[in-house]
Amino acid sequence: MSEDDDLAAFRKAMSDVRTLDDDHEGLFRERKKPVPLNLGDGSNEEDDLADLSVDVPDFFEFRRPGIQIRVFQDLQRGVIPPEEKLDLHGMRVKEAKSAYTRFMQQSIAKQRRCICIIHGKGLGSENNQPVIKQKTYHWLIQKEFVLAFVTAPSWDGGSGATYVLLSRKYRND
Image (cartoon, rainbow, N blue to C red; front, side):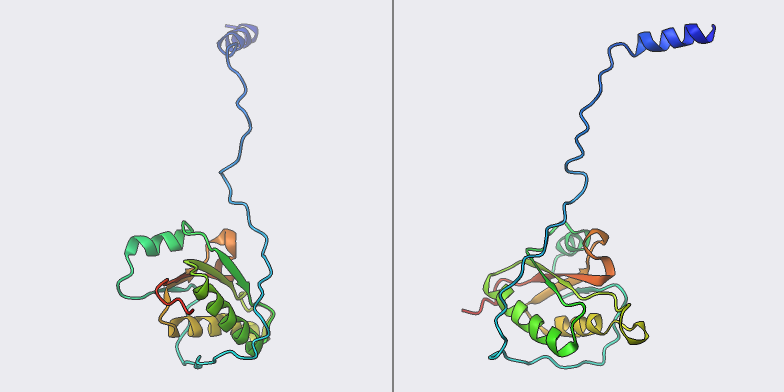
């Protein structure tokens, strides 16, 4: 067979082939733009967060007893999408603590199931130490209404953000 015969055979075989629609919807998650939160001025907030001397891992993984492994794995994979986000990176510890406290109170009041806290990776800090990331870890493990938390998937911040699973039974009216 010559090249012309091969080409003719190929064209004959491909004659009934049609182009598929180039529909890439659903392949990638569209990132939602952050919505500013009305956290108030923080003048009457309760501060019961202690500074702990607990080693903080690079990738967060925390689960209270009784949380189903499947639910925890869904949180890790990003199957449970966060309903609200709090961006702390670039803040000083005092500002971050105040914003965190108000955000958590608001999230519990609204009965949010999953939230995302963006704390950054600490690359802009002194000695590249992730101060806000460490504080966030300490603050999260102290609250009973925090059922589990994990490092966010790469499309939502990776090691610079944390997905938090909240209990709905602690609604503060």
